[in-house]
Image 1 (cartoon, rainbow, N blue to C red):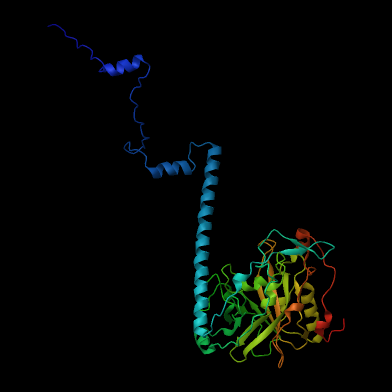
Image 2: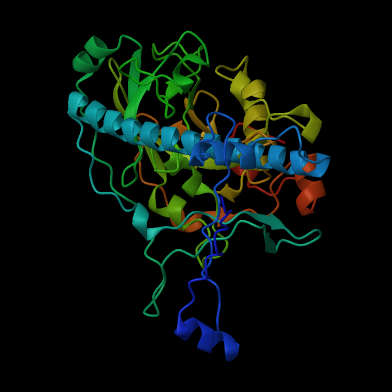
Length: 410
C-alpha cells in the first residue's frame, strides 16, 4: 500500500496582516500573562498569598530583603497600635465629658457662661540670662484677642455662691468631698478622695474606667475644716476637662497682657458638704520639677499642714520665689490654702513637671474682691537645673514684696 503523507497546514494569515507586516506595522497578538501557580493543584495564587509573600520574609529572600520586610512589618504594627490608642483615648475623653455633665446634673449645679474662647493656650517663656526680658520656647500660641480700640478687657468675673446637692453626690459615691469651680471656665466638677493617689487617676466618679479620671484630694486631707492646705490633683485633658483650665494661668507673653487669664479669673470656689461655699484668692503659679535627676524637686505635696508660723512662712517664701506672677493677695499664718496640681510638660514628657496654682481662703469678713491691676508678671521665677541647661537663665534671688507675708521679718 502506498504511504500517504499529510501536507503541512498553511499558516492562516490574512492579506491585511501580510500588508501590515511588509510595512513594518504588524504586531503579533499579545499572549495573556500566565499567572503564577501555587503548589496545590496548580491553582493561581490569590491576593492574600501574594501579600504574605511580599510582606513576610521568605526562605529565598536576600538578607537585605528580609530586613526591609521586618522593618515594614514593625512600622505597620506601630501604626496600628497608635491608631488604636488614639481612638481609645478619644472615646475615653468623650466619655469623661459626658460624666462631667452627668455630675453637674446630679449636683444641681449650673455650668454657667464659659469665656475660655477669649484666650489661647499660653506660650512657654523663660528669662534671658542677665535680663528680665522673655524668650519664647518652641511652644507658641496666638495672643489673647486684642482690638485697636483699647486694652484687653480684664474685668474680673463675679462669683455666685455654689449650691450643691451633696446628698445626691454622696449617694452616688461616698468618696465625695467637695465641688470645685472657677467661674467662666470649664472647671466645674466634683472632688473625691481615694484610698491613695492612684485610684482616681483612671477611675470616673461613677466607678467606671476612665482616662480622664476624677479630681481628687491628697490622702492626708481630713475635710473636717481643720486642713491647713487642701491639695487637689486633676488631669490636664486636651478637651478642657478636669484641670485643663488650670494651665491657662501660665503667662502668655505673646500678649500685651501676659497674665490676662489670671486677671479675669483671680479666684477659685470650693464647696463642701459641711462647710458651704467658700472663695479662695489665687496668689501664685509654679512650674515644679518632680524628678531628682533634673534638679531640685519642689515638694509642695508634702505640705497639708504646718508645724508652726516659721514652717508656714518658709513654705510661702518657697512658693513665691518660684511663682511666674505676683498678685496683691496678702498671706498670714492661719490662712487655709488651696493647691491645684496638674501635669504640664514644656520640656518634653520625659521630664515630669507640674503646673501648680496656690490660693488662700477669703478670711471671715473679708471681701473676695482682688485688685488684679496690681498683679505683675515675674520673669525671674526660681526653676531647676535641667530647665536652665535646656532653656538658659538662672535665678537671681527673691524679687517679690515680702510685706505681703504678714508676720515675716526677713
